[in-house]
Image 1 (cartoon, rainbow, N blue to C red):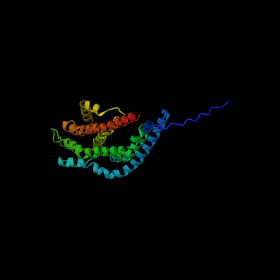
Image 2: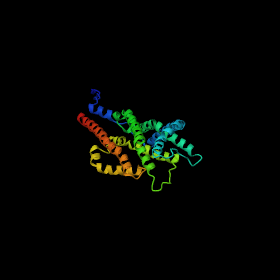
Image 3: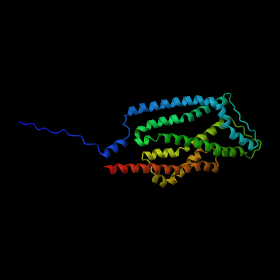
Image 4: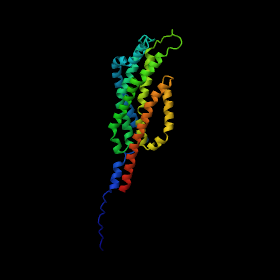
Length: 280
């Protein structure tokens, strides 16, 4: 009785399509509790960075505050008014120092916070998308600082000139501006424009996950203008139309930049999917 000897099956080499698919696979899926644990870790690291940044910010705020009040001093001088700011509470000036230092700390810690956000989002991205971290961090910080610069050099001086020069019918009424109220106004303008300038980054992520496309953004341009006008009306601290248009102009320009970013992201994704289909 002879036993038949069967040759051992030799595993077939993986096809190119399988290799391509594995190379394009995102990181392993995590459970719900693993997501919560990862989120908790990223939040703790971000708070550490903000705390260290705030400590540094409070120390340097005494130098930055002279730079912050320069536009209002110039506006008061041009309006032939007393170029001084006051505070009406014993701790008013100290609160301004601390508050300014905290916001400076947030700006200083923003690269670390953005990096933690990226690490939390990265497991859901493909390998080539995760390699774009440098461009993401640079673009986000650059756009935010560009918004602050636009607000400080363009928007804020115009707003202050309009508000200070508006004397009203009674000439005996003179402005007595407190440093706290001026700082609140400056904070709204600068941080508001800094966040508005992040619009291309928002569109980048929405396009990356396939939520929006350049065709969708272009088709709904009229509705986007309406939303931009509403946001500008809410953020604008003055009732005049010119200030609102100054707020709207960069937002409309950034919307078109976002359409270009969406087109690049969508084209690359479609090219990658077409390559994967052809490899099969």
